[in-house]
Amino acid sequence: MGLRVHKAHAYGNDFLFVPLAEGGADRGALARVLCDRHRGVGADGLIFCQLHDASATMRLFNADGSPSELSGNGLRCLAALVARTQNLQPGARVTVTTEAGLKTLELLTRHGGRFTFRASMGAAEDVRQVTIPVGGMSMTATVLRVGNPQCVVLGPLPAAGRFSELAPALSTHPMFPNGTNVEFADVETPGRVRMLIWERGVGPTTSSGTGACAAGVAAAAHGGAERDVEVMAPGGTQRVEWRSDGIYLTGWAEVVLEGEWL
Image 1 (cartoon, helix red, strand yellow):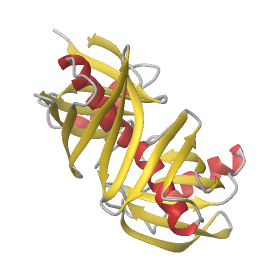
Image 2: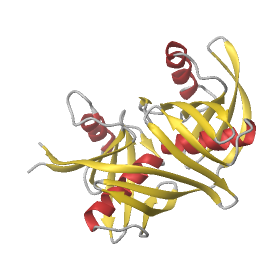
Image 3: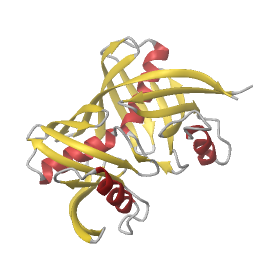
Image 4: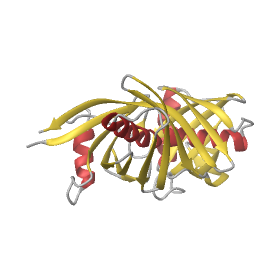
């Protein structure tokens, strides 16, 4: 008997889902095997989950097997799995218990297998600017937590080669002993931010929910952007609202596979 696996993605940022009880003593090892894009199913992360009535519990591991507190896109993918499994309709709410606390998502629309949610992501914590020596230069970055650690560099987006050099160096910089997610973000207009993403434990990704939240907050705090912005990543655009009661993230997710890992 194999292991039942679902796969979902949000703007190309993809996740696998297996029952919470699976994985044994080394869930990270299972994450590395399943997320391998050549020898496994392939994904940016593995989420161990348990579904309840319009709710779920999740525990996330990155593709390299390291644990993570939260993924905004992974959270929404899990909500899409709940909505699909339980045939939820627009207006329904899905609550998810994560390592970063309880998150609530409102289902706005569903079109076929695609579900759009507005997720309450919680507060932006410890938002501050720092100077980081990296790549032979000193970079000014906004660091913060949106359930997980983030480092946002505001300004024109770097070329591909420079991004591939700077992003992993920042992600593993001694300033961040547990590593950090990295975004380069350009405020194109007060209502629009464009970003590139390097996810801790994964590498470059087409999208990131918490990364979009971090880029939106950094852009509003230190880049002259509005507190309600479109954040554009290579995979698509999400809406980030930084309100007095926390951050709200709006975007879609869809379940694309149900299978058995042999």
